[in-house]
Length: 391
Image (tube, rainbow, N blue to C red; front, side, top):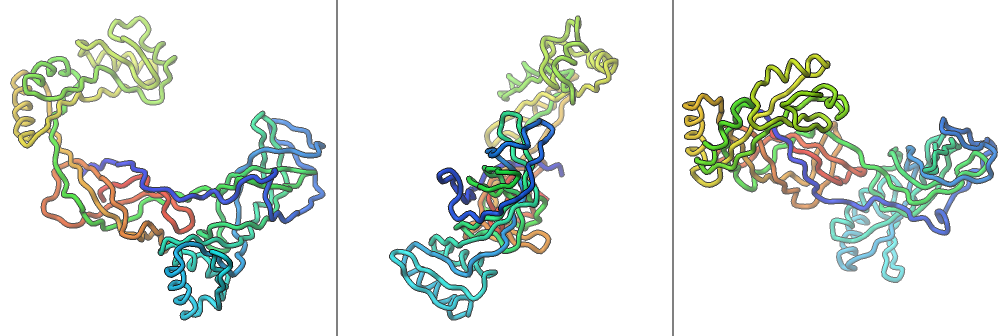
């Protein structure tokens, strides 16, 4: 059946890993370069001593220091620490004020260990060494761009990324003598993952809604009959024209009495004008294809199906083309772990509940539904569900 996409923001994970500090990052590893910055197409002075702007470039988590600094509920933290020591993932741990410093056997185990502490609502940070791409394009927002040698830095971060992984990031940068010498406000951009196939639990049974689709030529005639049937009627007295600017449409329908206005991709038409063939020819002469949308009469309440069917029959008697349309809405719960191409993406414990909708008659008395999910992730953590479709 046809699918509808439901776009829903679920939850967000903070991914800003550094703030600008007087004026750039503490813990900077200076990589003094001898090459001069080259200018971009927008210009710039390659001999300038210092240049400050913003950049988007790849950043690699080259390695972590093999320890975590953990804060939160002490008894819960101790239980997680004991489990890590028992399994051999951690070697020892000591309290320093309100923080527990946990020494790990391997730096590669930092993200997994941090996730265990976060599962008990604790906060864990680690020292990471980050390296930019070899070349970094820095722009100041005033049309000046320079391309500089990359750099490396160390900082404390929430270790949600695997050691050795590379991610696109946005950050502030300072350039001196062709070398990036300072970075700040680093935000690692989320990864887009599409088409994750999931069997989701149905948490709220799909409910059907019924409406009547009225052909473009009968939209005016259907208005009174829809009102008499107590339907909510959306008359669409306009025409879609893909990839057409307002200026182009103004020229295409200049002097045409049926046109009441234009905007990008849309021509508004007089409510009682029904000659779609003439409009189609006029637009085709200008190289455009017209699409004539249906108007919609919708119903609410338990008797909506019978009311919709009765309106279809009434419109047919009046020689108005109309069809019955069935849609449904419901709620599903995704599991806490979603997988695609061998990689796991982690959501909140207990899964993610969200609304979903589709077209056609809903299945009855079912407990699960196959869906396709699009998401954004930071490392292995789900940042946002961007779309879900019945599969």
